[in-house]
Image 1 (tube, rainbow, N blue to C red):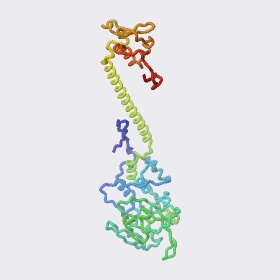
Image 2 (image 1 turned 120 degrees about the horizontal axis):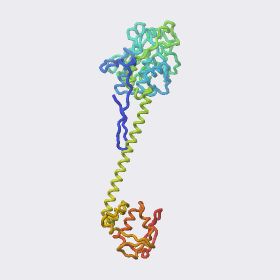
Image 3 (image 1 turned 45 degrees about the horizontal axis):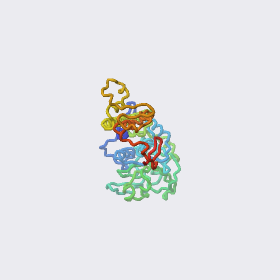
Image 4 (image 1 turned 45 degrees about the vertical axis):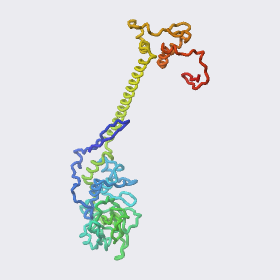
Length: 432
């Protein structure tokens, strides 16, 4: 799906396309099959496919918080580099999917912790079936869920026996959380956004009086889980059980288990999903840098176009207004056509072929300038005519040289100045 940037300035709108990264044919995951929309997949404890659950919740419009102050492990960063993705720009759901699919979970301190698989299992099938759990001598507690299906959890089970059925090994770490929840649980809320979180379960068993340590991968927050040998309440994960997986710790494993553990390999379909859906917002490829430059250039060009259109509009408006003013003045009784045309085009007055030039105004240069057919007692010093010929005083020039108005002027001696109203660089205004 194409994305666009909507650039709107001063009422002008420009749509700038933003290109998403296309999967190259050389990408191993380009043809990987994504989970089907018609799939009957449910995260109910029969599998540990958290990535698929997160994919469906993402498509359903769910979201999750990003991991705060997260230190990306080296192997996870290597995969991010291959996918050309920035961890810190990925949304929370995408972070969880990539984390789990790459063989990691988080501790209660929000630190990444590595997971290895055993006996050929993958990250999607670490869930221990009920039959295998009971085969090692463990009993189960049965709880009803809102969907009329059951959730199972460990009841009576020695730590050593439980680990016989475990399918994973977890990197040892110091856990400050004291937890008393179950270490093996099936069932699950179909709408849950799981977060793979590891807790250390350490206890002395009352049956054989031995100390046991089991690392368990939980998928919901502690407040969403019931205590051991209890069923979930309505306010705990909506009354559903939640997947919990028992695992060995690297601190206490046999040489046989140590040699059997394998690093998780990310799945191609998760890589394809993340690149297709998130490279536009979390990409780190050089193409994205070129795109940013292109985007800036496009925005700058759009702004220049808008400014140019605005300037043209302003120029045309001013020109139309000037024409209106000219037409008004030509029709005014104080502006004779021949005279105003002379003002408008000085070369016009020099053309002797123009008829009726004799009716234009006459200025006689002497000590004073007098006007034809008017009261000659009204006189003006000659230098004013040159002053009023300037472009800034054109209107004053027109009014001053109008034969119609000259006869209506008051003599300077008859004017009595009472009070100055305003003074400025261009003159003064008086009350007379």
